[in-house]
Length: 375
Image 1 (cartoon, helix red, strand yellow):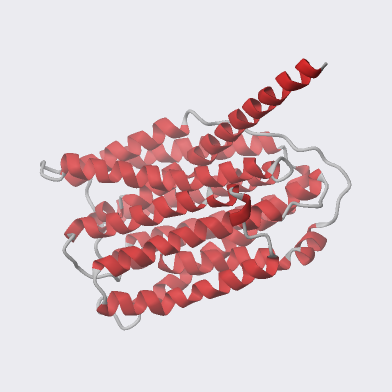
Image 2 (cartoon, one colour; image 1 turned 135 degrees about the horizontal axis):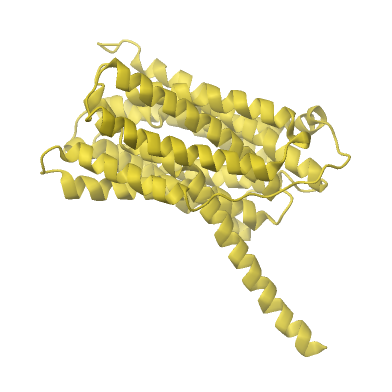
C-alpha cells in the first residue's frame, strides 16, 4: 500500500507537467499568426507607408475580437466549447495561409487593394482570437492555476517566437534582393506550420451557477485591472514603437529589437508567479500596481523625445515585464472559491474585459500622432 502511494505521486507530477506542456503549446498556437503579422511591421510600412499599417491593423482586429467575445461570453453556457476552440484554431490556420497567398498573388506590391485584403485577414484573426482565448481560459479556469499560467505563457511565447524568427530572417535576407519580402513570407509559412499542429479543445458542463452580472460585480476590481493593464500596453505597443521612437544607431533593426524585448520580457514574467513568494495575491495590491504603470506614459513620451535607444529598450522591457506578470496574477487568483461552471464563465468575462482594454488602448494609441506631420 505504501509503495503504491509512493509510485502514484511521481505519476501525478508527470501527468501534471505533461498537461502544462500541452497548455503551453495551445497558447503558443493561438496567437503566433497574429504576432507574426505584428513583427513584420517593417515590411508593411514599406508596402503601405502612408496608411499607418500597424495602428490600423490592430484597430481593425480589436472590434471583431471584442464583438465576437461579447456574443460568446453571453452565450457561454449554451456553446460547445470544444467546437468553439476548433473553429478558432482552424480560422487562425486558414487566415495565416491567406496572408501568404495574398502576398504571393500581389507579388508583394502595395496599394489600396492589398491593404484592404490584409485588413480583412486582420479581422479574421480577431474573430479567431475571441473563439480560442475565451474558450481556453474559461475551461482552464476550473483546473489548477498552473494550467492557465502555462496557457498564458504560451500566448507570450508566440510573440517571442515570432520576434526571434523575424530577427533571424532579417539576418538571412537583409542583403539579398527583395530580402524584406522573403523574410516575411518565411515567417508566415512558419506560422502556418505552428497553427495546423495545435487544433484541440476542451468541453464544459452546464450546471447551476451565478449569473454573469453577479460574477462581474463580485470581480469588478480584477476586471478593471485587466482592462487597465491592456489599455496602457496597447496604447504603446506596437504603434508607438514603430512610429514615435525616432531613428537611432540600430537603424531598421530598432523597432524589431523593441518588439522582441517586449515579447521576451512578457514571456519571462509569466513564469514569475510560479514562485509562490513572488506571486501578488492581494487584489488591492494588484490594482495599485496596475495604476502605477500609467507613469510609463510620461516616461515613454520624454524618452522618445530626449532619450537614447538604451533607455527606450529598458522602458519597453519593463512594459512587457509588468504586462505578463500582472496578467497571470489576475487570471490565477480570480477563479478561487467558485464552482466549475462559474469559473468557466468568469474566465470568459475576464477575457472580454481584457479585449475591451486592448481595443481602447489601440484607439488611444492614435493620440501619439497628434501634432505629428503627415497625420
